[in-house]
Image (cartoon, rainbow, N blue to C red; front, side):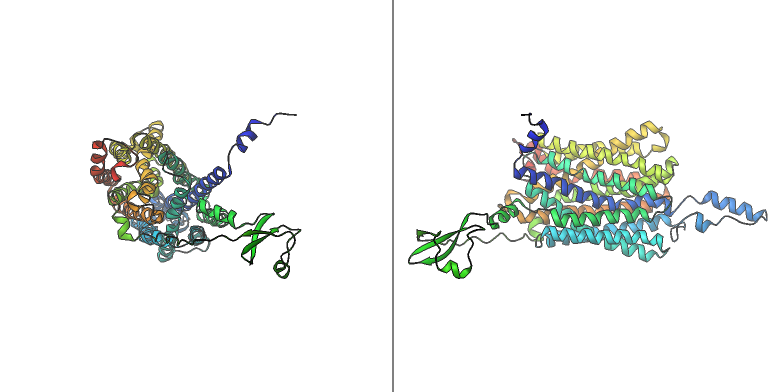
Length: 518
């Protein structure tokens, strides 16, 4: 007999719960990857919505002054109306602000709603709706729509429905994974943010120069398909499996039928011996009777109610980490929405090359998120880990502002380092810290606070995410240096928000995970 291959032996060594845990990890990873994949195209398409038309205009002017017929059609060959005006930066910033402001407002409501609805259905509806609105933006190119109100409406609607994603997946993954090594698990899992950004950049970049509408339509289809997958396969909580197996009646299981003269009688429930209701009343010969026992019915404690908004705010550490995330996410989302355009303008690359190069920032973000989780698990100090990375990020941002003076090699290194230091704290706060606070000991085991706490932290962060791209659009008109000064200021403010928690962690004699807020 041949030996069993080692790979098969490894597969059969996992029990059923471990397989379901792996399924939940992979599925939620892919689900939120599709969310970020559908958000990224706007940053890639910006440089196509408004091209550098100065050279075209100069040639057109020379042609008209020389009396030769003007063969250059700037409306067709240059920018996409209404982004062809001098205030294009403000218009592009307004589109970002529309999405992110709606996202920030909706996030506060999303967590509260999510605690009271089935996560699987709530997430499925959100993903299908997001797919619809993402495709609608791309259809603006197909149907030649130049109305600014249309694009703002689509961005607002998409921002609202995308709030269904984060509280749902964080609650789901936290239900399946305990506190042990949560930083590492969440750090690996949260790389879906950067993976989604990378895939979104590559997909959008493939069509950006030829048909930018497809840069939105394809990601929209992907997130809608993943919504269908979510409906069929997402398991919200391990207890859902236990109830499913308990409800299934296996062959040969004894089922009570009737009380007869002080005894409960059972019959064998098999395919061959299954009787009709009338036959069951006659007590068939394969029945088994056992003496009746006195049963004491104990009233079960009611299931913990969902926590209120103010109750979640009173959890120690929620306010500090929420404010820190506001400034950290301001920096991260400014890069998310404006980095490709910045590279295009300063490094003089086309839209596709700039989009491909910008993915290195997200690669650095993957490494930074994992490192932040591992270090915080090892030290047991979440706030201190975030603070150190924020402190190192400030001089890196200053160096990044001089990207046009670097060669290609140093630019790649700067993108990787900056991505790790900027996204590391953002990743840690939105995952491991949110999960720790959502299961804080002050809640006395009430796990129904997790979605609300996650929504409060990420919702507050989303206010910064809305302000960052808007301010970048306004400040970039006066030079990109002003944008980076704004980012460095936000980085220092994020650090200041954590000072109390850092002091408490460093003065604590023991270092359990997230000790500063316990």
